[in-house]
Amino acid sequence: MTTEAVKNALRRQEIELPSWAFGNSGTRFKVFPQPGVPRSPEEKLADAAVVHKLTGVAPSVALHIPWDKVDDYAKLAAYAKEQGVRLGAINSNVFQDNDYMLGSVTNPDPRVRRKATDHLLECVDIMDATGSRDLKLWFSDGTNYPGQDDIRDRQDRLAEALKEVYDRLGDDQRMLLEYKLFEPAFYTTDVPDWGTSYAHCLELGPKATVCIDTGHHAPGTNIEFIVAFLLRVGKLGAFDFNSRFYADDDLMVGAADPFQLFRIMNEIIRADALDPDRGIAFMLDQCHNIEPKIPAIIRSVMNVQEATAKALLVDRDALREAQQEGDVLGANAALMDAYNTDVRPLLADLRSEQGLDPNPIAAYQRSGYFEQIAHDRADGQQAGWGA
Image 1 (tube, rainbow, N blue to C red):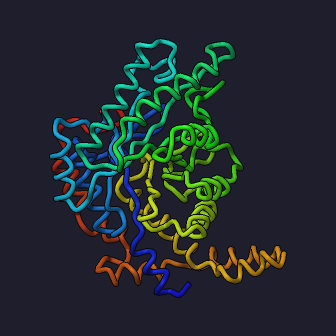
Image 2 (cartoon, rainbow, N blue to C red):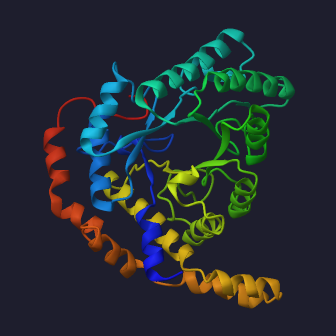
């Protein structure tokens, strides 16, 4: 692919930002507050708009309910538009209430299951008001001990709730079912892997797709295989991009294993699935506990751009020829040559052509925006996981 073709592909790339990444969030042990943290969904959108203005590729912002609960969601959508962004996926929350100690939609208590399902339906109502396409579901449901609950019954309860929510979706709306290997359930997790998510989505129908959170896998998992498989069967709906070194996730994407991020994006390019029209949402799902939040989010966006640019530079003809001839080293070299290319000058040129600063981090630091919000937001309650 020529340099200009790479730039044209990158011009159409879109990365969705998570509203919660701008708030105070961290590990289960401690959340460290920072100056300038948003106090409302509107201030989160204002921060996200700054990231988009500096990078040019982050035009949408995912909401988390009830963390981003407002009285008028149409008004919030209008405010986002004024800021130069739009509202993206609506993320549900059925893991923080005390009622959900033994699960939400899989809880043995029908009252709790009803409460959880009603919240998911409320999120679809919010989608109607905001014009959002995607409902993203993640369940912490599971068990800690053998015999604690019936594993098959829990799958039946999950399927029943998903079906009710699926049937409520509009024609242009869809469900993204996320999975997680473990945490907080340590014996069984009700949606522990991509296969379980895929099976439920297949049963539900075409409006249900899998969301791959890159931090939600066992060490050594070949995530690009999962990407390739789901692309092949048309069931990959979204990514939650982040990194993890051991058991937890939510670090900046590309921080732990940038080569893995490149391999993932290589499969996206192989399937010609980068363009927004293909329907795959490239979302960040991160928290920034000790690092400054806005620069960390900008850095994450840049990491995805760099991995994408490298994947676009793979010589597809040389790679295919080597693969068909059984040239193991030649095929690997075709990938490695692209991965080892320094694409930062290319991206800097692209930003300059778009009227952006070639270095978004430096531009943010010079902007004075942090000093402004640190002053303006000195009072009030900062947003966080429980806000």
